Image (tube, rainbow, N blue to C red):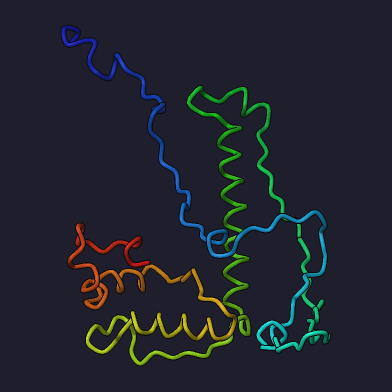
Amino acid sequence: MAGNRPDTGDVHVNALMTNVSIAYINDNYIADKVFPIVPVSKQSDIIAEFDKAYWFRDEMTERAPGTKAAESGWSVTTTATYFCVSFALRKIIPDEVRANADDVFNLDMEAVKYLTDKAFMRREKEFADTVNASGSWTSTGTINAKWSDFANSDPIDDVMTTKRTIADLIGREPNTIVCGKIVRDRLLRHPDCLDLIKYTQRGILGEDLLA
């Protein structure tokens, strides 16, 4: 009936919201957190490696007055190299699309975000493939039980033992541990870990306290 006009459908045309949108962007990339980014000026070069045996050997000796000091030194290995590979991806924005885009779209900014995430994704995959490749790591430690086995596992001792093992090999303790979310969640609920912080002011175990 005309007396009921205009109704809600007559007075509004649906449009894109300007303050809300839905997108999927990964914010949990860890490659640059695990290994620092090293700037280089050349595409390829050699990485000098000071041989460990010379630096870990005790050679300081007593010297009598007027005599020469004992000599020592070290060798440098130059077998390690790097080569930077270029990666690229483009997102074309045709003039017709740009001209016809509603104000809610900032096509240039969205393209930058899109391609930046693609770059991070590729770097993360290269990182994961490299660190998980067979032969990348020397395994010298074992654990008696999975950390999900709360009754029989001892994650604190496992980590401390591994840190000592690494320190024995390279002369310093590691400062980073990488684990998946399933392992992290198990540790956050592990009785041994919870027992360490039960008298803290928070009493709630998070990643900061777990570290």
